[in-house]
Image 1 (cartoon, rainbow, N blue to C red):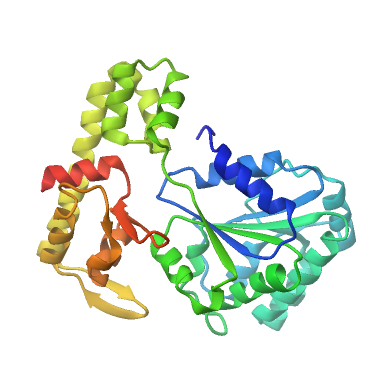
Image 2: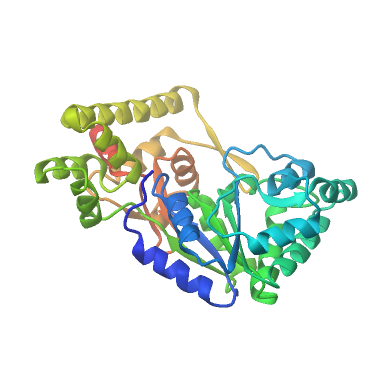
Length: 348
């Protein structure tokens, strides 16, 4: 996805990086709003005195200690001293989704001990060595992948303890966590453990003016821009699709809406005929079709609603199915995209 006009967010990230680490930052937003594109552009613009370790957990299968360790680190044939020297010499303008570079024999020793504490102790020492010459930045993309995993207790709690130590206690390393799971953000936001230790950066869809400027670059007329905005709002991934289908734009927009309506109809049909359940804090709850319909009808004339008027079961169900997105900071819930909003209204 092409990067476009996130100067406000980039300015904030750059200002954060200039200061001593003291807080965990959560970068969150609706699906396909451009969070990963933003963080990649941020990395590219950093000067050479930073060392960035970027770990993308998207699509990773993690069930145990070994899985977690092998996702967090990537193996190299070099020795540890050689790896650390190469990090000091290397420009920051690279991205690796394969983890933090370490010698394989080091990980073999850690795996043999079978404790997450050994991983975190090693990581703290590793980053301390890097910090002698460069300022380290640790970025975990799609962090919610590990939210329910238990490895000697809940892994996410242990990881947050490490992040608090790296930022607030040692001021050693900036930590940025990316996620599109707004239920996960709500959980973190309300966690007593992280109050005063975490801050939040929303990466939302483009506003109208940004969308207009973006499409103008590709020769869209005012009429075409209005059509795209009507169907897709400022969702970056849909804007790219619109550019690729510019020659038959109206038909494409209508087809996308039909597809979204069909998807939503299918979801409701399965719920009505087969039922469904959601898990909240480890307990299963039955989802009621009538409640889901009632919540969707709230968006007939409103773009967003207050989170407190939704029942928890229906809220979890619609957010988990990527129909709704919640911002726990302002307490509002809205459809994941303008297209979702139109589909909801058509069904209503």
